[in-house]
Image 1 (cartoon, rainbow, N blue to C red):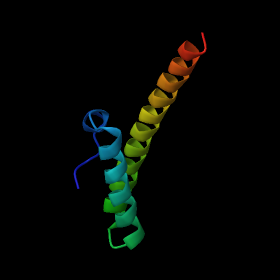
Image 2 (image 1 turned 90 degrees about the vertical axis):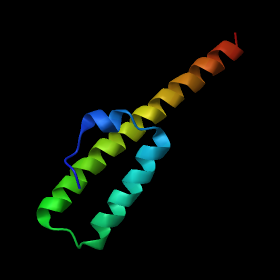
Image 3 (image 1 turned 45 degrees about the vertical axis):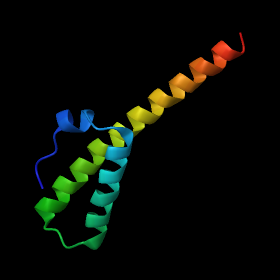
Length: 72
């Protein structure tokens, strides 16, 4: 597992970030990783969760804008 990099996470689509986050959670739940590996996975998971949240906020804003345009 490489060190978490905000740069590569910033380039992921919502689906890519979500799928990787699911894999990270599964690895953490298995409990087979060392403490160092678990910390790296946790940090990566935090970055991925933030990326997903960014996508969802953007989608919400686009929907709100479309709704306000439609009601005008």
